[in-house]
Length: 426
Image 1 (tube, rainbow, N blue to C red):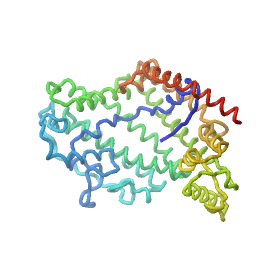
Image 2: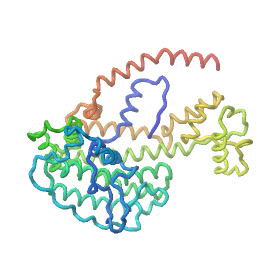
Image 3: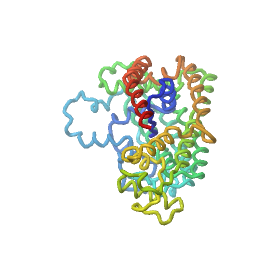
Image 4: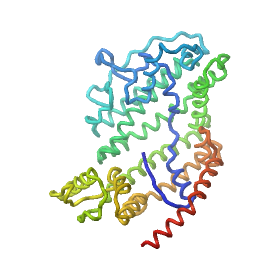
């Protein structure tokens, strides 16, 4: 998660940053995950049960882990009208077809194997291309089958859709997390190569007319009022998300929309890489312990270890030298504990200005992103991207502006006084 810290900065800059941080809308809503009914047919796995007899429908790392809670507490449900009791809801009398046999995956690829927790220790850059492509092929087949057999019912629409969205989210999340904590040129190249394919699939999923029509049919079904408010919200959200994904756009506009989404994803990836590289680039060597007075022993130990990694072989937590970086453990320790005000200011300024100059400058990326988001909003018949973002939220653009102004006005005088005191003390 990106973290940005600012003092009294202009509200225009706040809006710019907030706009930049809003994620591109390329996937279906994650709101359906906690509300689906668990069963063995919704395993988010793509290997045969014979090969891996130990399997779990809701591993802890999955966004669907809450499904397990429904199984655990099933015996305690006494209200037949509760939101968990509507799994039989259907606007179709078509009986469910038996589960299709799962295809065998690449056995040696950890991204495609049965695991209780993400296998971060064995996933390497070489696994990304074949793993993601094999997964996308499997999910594409699942999507085609879902579109072929879909009807307006919970088990034949929401549950299989959950499996598709969740599996891709989990596997791609593993790859993305490794890039953030164990970055390498090989991993970046692999992600850059398969990312357009991933975005293409998500667009294909988000713009699926059969799924969109099925959700609409549920909404228009005579049994609509038998659904709980939670499930009604799910259906309404999926319909809204599909529209915001471009499902209603004409062919030429949809093609333009998809090109924009691909470019936004590429820019977002480059933005993150620049921030990561700028974070790595900063280091401050300290030899006088007085300069880092106040840091706890753990922070001093980390700073000494950082110094060792930079070539200072004899560095120790007690005697130094120490290297301060912008990585979260080092940065937070300095900001919270260092008594040296000049050190805190230097580290803080370096942190909030990452990727703002030189080869890693993100300014042009922000400009391009804002331009493309406006084009995207116009294609969807919105005035600006803020309206697109707020379309699925309880807030509105006007309320957001009102809140920002309240924060600005409440903090302005205190910020001015603090700045004046700092200048006087300096």
